Length: 120
Image 1: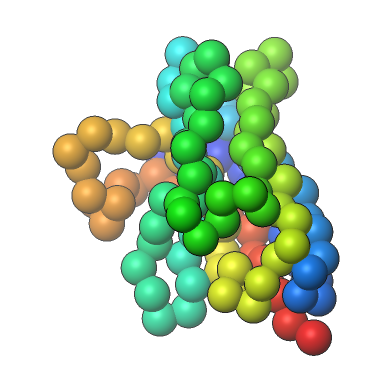
Image 2: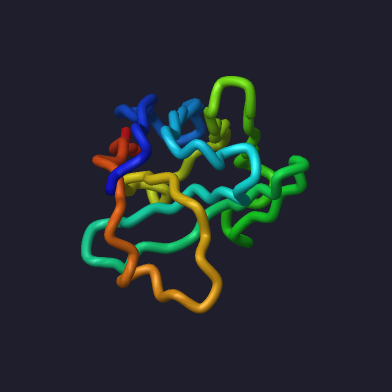
């Protein structure tokens, strides 16, 4: 069952910024670690950033220092502030809750995602 709605993507020039949002309908949102994922054309989906229930974050090495993930538990919403964007950040971005031991390919509840295109 799909439980997320992502938004905020678009076309941006290299070096630009975007802020993605994800609204989650799961009643356990505030008790779930959450993640932002992306899938670039021809590539596998990957975890870009993760956040614990108390706001601690981890990032893919290639986005460290450029992306900032946050959450608002009162609004059941995640955010991904993306700065200094590069063409290699071009992808469809999704949010979901990480499941230990389950391959991403086996998740069956992805939302529609939001497309980010970084190009001049």
